[in-house]
Image 1 (cartoon, rainbow, N blue to C red):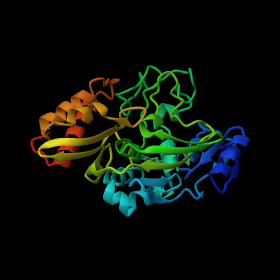
Image 2: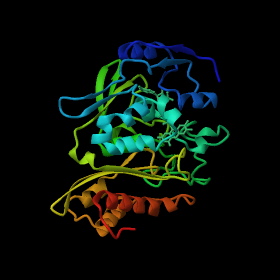
Image 3: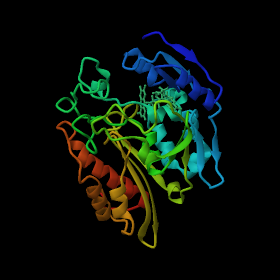
Image 4: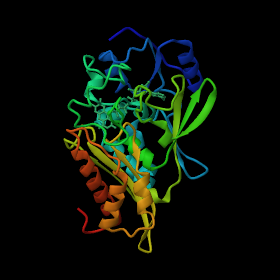
Length: 331
Ligand SMILES: Cc1cc2nc3c(=O)[nH]c(=O)nc-3n(C[C@H](O)[C@H](O)[C@H](O)COP(=O)(O)OP(=O)(O)OC[C@H]3O[C@@H](n4cnc5c(N)ncnc54)[C@H](O)[C@@H]3O)c2cc1C
């Protein structure tokens, strides 16, 4: 690991000012991703600005009924908060599907949003990776790509976003609040993470001098009946092959609201707008769920080892929607 300096600012403006004053500085949350990347010399910041102890560590109900979650809130604290378990169970379930108890105790909300891909070619400094080394190529495309993207990928990058929590936040239509030298701004969750295009190293809409201060979840009645399911190679301590976060409400035999997002399938948490469009107004049947899944995965493409993910994503979506609505006869 290279030498670096370390600082603990007292608040968000101080953190942003520190970052602006030092070339090649990075924010540090729980360190569960960044420190690994520094050990591997994939990230080599000259200074760490530790934001994990800042007073943005509260979970608060807002006047509009939504929930504000400070960026320094630890993943465990968020998953176990009574309001989250009661009003947004999908979020609690998604977090508890990720990593291990020890890692969740350390990891922060801000760091979870900004964690980097688990593509093995990104971690292997002898491999070509446009994300790590722009213009070097992508060895995953013709390589071992079992974990890789089936939606929204590009000839430059087929990596996936690894977060479980972010899949739930996508379905819940969260907003990310950030603070930078030009002041504060809010970014809708679906616009926060980017598809790779020709610049896969640019992963989010967050500018390099901006700090995430909080994430806001709107008041969503539909979310109290919500579910997260993660399909993975081991029962714990493994990243998603495919995951589904969904919330559905049914009135008089018809679906009136649906919020769906997929994980493990794209460079960003994949909000399933097409599936939602098909679901709203339909009867909650296995047939309707399959049609929604087909619509969402129409543009899906495999790269050989990961072809199975297309059918797996469809079946997982059908299964989750069936469980949420108590529908029989689905696969
Ligand atoms: C063995 C292992 C297994 C794992 N399994 C899973 C899993 O199954 N599912 C899953 O979802 N995750 C998994 N993870 C990843 C884990 O969730 C992330 O490492 C964690 O969420 C990162 O949070 P952190 O606070 O430690 O971030 P850090 O490592 O401190 O930082 C990560 C990035 O976020 C930036 N950052 C931190 N805070 C802010 C902020 N407030 N504003 C702007 N930028 C910020 C940092 O500069 C850095 O670039 C696993 C990790 C490990 C090590």
